[in-house]
Image (cartoon, rainbow, N blue to C red; front, side, top):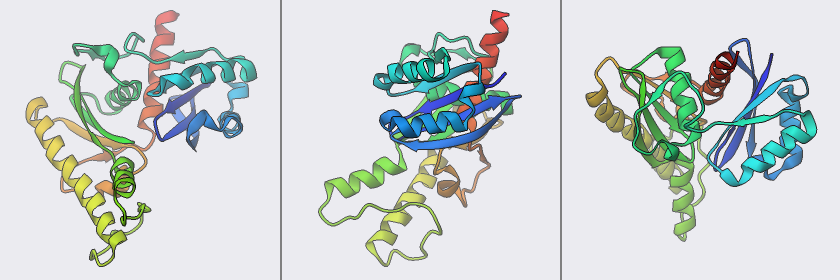
Length: 252
């Protein structure tokens, strides 16, 4: 049966339908449940009225009760909220596992199911996070850096003359306008961050470690990267689905 998978971040929320080991009907919501009508439409588009379960990865705890209420009230679905205590097909070797973002755990599981371990996952969200699953199949932590929206938004908010840049599209050849200069800085800067941080982590986890990336700006930021990296647009939602299936098998 189908499971509704929800990834709620600080900037946006993604909703999809997990069925037969695949994610479909993906919808992205700016602000997520702040717009209940849009959230309900996204849940309907994902087939929540025909699903039998739902799971949420959230880094915004204040909105979790709203998701619980909406799914129960509108679709009679009990929402499972992912935490470090949720059964999953990887181990956790981390001093304070309750501090791990649920989206990072979902990314790790999704990457391990698809690529095995060791594996490094770069997730381009509000923050640019890197997560590592070691050669023993344990989540061991990673690195957190400013993400593209945070970097460009902060420059706009904290300066008098720098505009809010529309990311995406072709990278300018020259920084001959303020917008072009910021766009080049954002793209090349993040590509460089990935190269340096991934190289640092691979030196620890081993040269055979697979590097994959997810998040809305991953493909744009990493275009032209001079190291192997697999782009996985639906990795977080897929990982949520795999965690749901793993826990369901344990319950049978």
